[in-house]
Image (cartoon, rainbow, N blue to C red; front, side):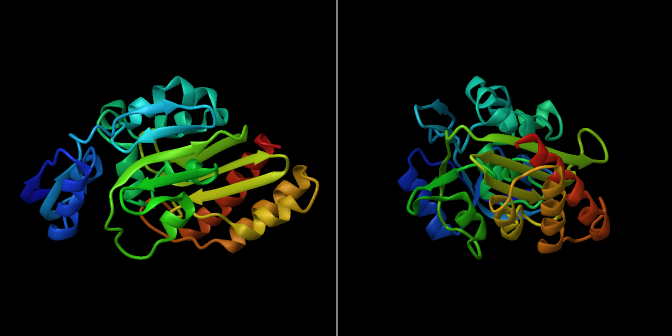
Length: 261
């Protein structure tokens, strides 16, 4: 990573103006950028904006954008809610040293296809709060076309007592996932997401609608996983072929559904 100009503002308004005027690249923990060969004209460091926090509120948990993945992994409130899937998913990301640097905001704002964080967040009732754009669903944020010229302030996960599951397959314990999947359920309201396809995590709408319309058991879980594998698109890269990912989708989605029945 090479940087020509480096900005470290002390307020969100200053940060937004730099982002707008300089078309800057936002630096969270910088973990993913450090392992790239990207050349950056203007870098925007958010470390002075006090966005490193996890707040356990009555109806939601709020996570500041600059909170490290390691802090997310270890947080008691996140372990005690959502069947611990957020802690489990972040704990699977590379090594501890990496998680001590990488931030949840960088992982989400980067909208990385290989993300192990986005997949379980998408399967929960999750929102993001942007400095100018306000509060929107994570799903809408991920589906926004083009570069988002705004600053992610925090991630908000609503506490609705969902059971949740996170599944992944990877070549080694510290490798990126070949495929990951997550499911959640409350009162037969199933949410499913599949990531590392290798595209960004998506929700198979037809599979979710099928589950909501029937009695869920092993047979219907298998059927829903097959629907998901047909509904979603898969690609090939050095970690796996699209055919392999499609078969993994069936297995991981079925496993996730059965865990949250």
